[in-house]
Image 1: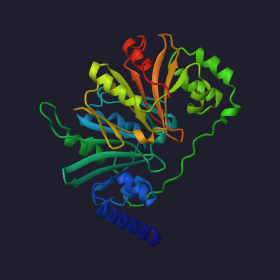
Image 2: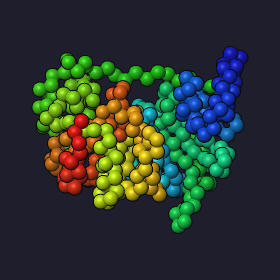
Image 3: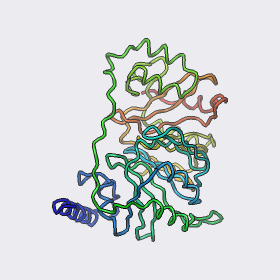
Image 4: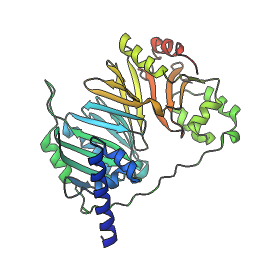
Length: 357
């Protein structure tokens, strides 16, 4: 590493420390945003202190996560965080290279897209709450994709396997343990301007869907942005008031209605399936605070909230989809369902009752 790079890293580390001192409790992601750099670049300044760089075949790392036992898996985007405590259980890898993906089924459920995995770190940091240990993955831009945390024994629930964690870290420790990483800007493939999309052809294909997974192929076929498609497909979509999301969660908790919540980023989508219990609003955050599942959603970042209906062989599947002002999806909500089974009537009735925007 040259002198200029070393100086820049020292300056970044000092700026981070100064920011933390003036803003106790500020998380590393928010610090990085204020400093104008990525979270991975900030974390890399601690390599050799309490952080270890990882490298290797990420699909092999994921296949070994079940060895850790009970952990906490965290996935987020700017508007929503999902946290699940449990086991990585059934993992299937499909494809290879940048097209590789994984399905994770069980107490922790995810859809992993390895094309969005670039940097890996193992973190062992002393905090006011004790030793915090995690494996953290970031994409090419240095944005967090997924974090897996060691958890302690809780009642009759076992803690993580410390020996397995240490072995996993040792097996994937990178030969390069420098504090410098090089991030790059990620440009998403352009889509057509909304005015250039053949809306009638889009509607025809929408009506012909047999499975919810057909939706992604339809968007690609018409080269249309997802949010633009919702605006064009008014036969199947409409906007609801943003405060309706809290109504959905409150009602699901009160009636014990099982739901699904999807949230994530370009490298991982984490999924909640089941009931929710404790709903709390704290400042701008709409929260689910249950023993093994937490959701934290920035209501102030929701620009539009939509009801979306997709035809399938099992009947219409209804979702609620939240978008920010940059057309990014924050989160999706469904009634709990499995392939081959129609959606819950109680979910459809709840959605129908929500106030339109």
